[in-house]
Image (tube, rainbow, N blue to C red; front, side, top):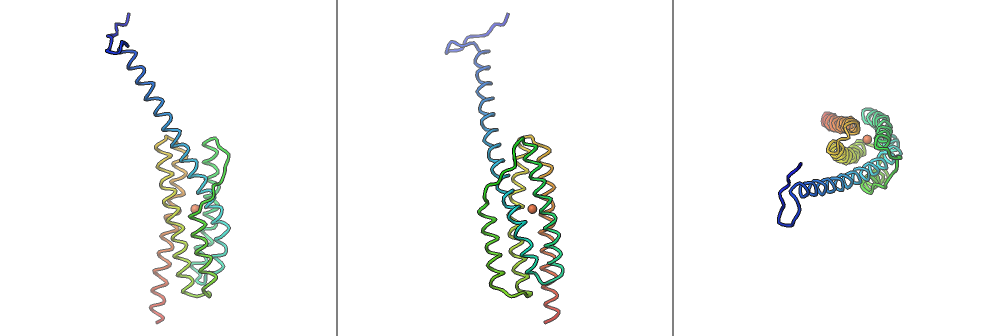
Length: 193
Ligand SMILES: [Fe+2]
């Protein structure tokens, strides 16, 4: 027979600890659902961003002059298609239908790229501007996917965290490639001067 000591408020210690555990469990559940909500909202944001980027990259590719940059945009169009389908896979893993939420940041970054293409003629200068615009996009995506991956692993969604890590690595590769192109084109221009 359990012998619970009675506490000052008249409840047994066993009852008090059960109530405490229940309260803690409820707090954890609420916290988990808030993290879940944040994760899903961020996922909808990056889903919109990737789809919008997919529409915009061909215009950037068309405006680029250097073969290397044209190829880099072509590769990134293919990579972005893969990101869209992996994000859809993550929605699926979470038992949710894929949905978008407008990403003001991506819209702004693309508007800047668009303005640049309207202002500059095709040239090495436009190429440099396109690299800047594309790297700003990559840095936004790197931040978004890094945070999503951290949230996913914190909530124990290992499969989603792995897919997010794969996308993150590809965004980092795209960013490094753009840096290499920028550096080599600066060197080429220096040689021609
Ligand atoms: Fe992407």
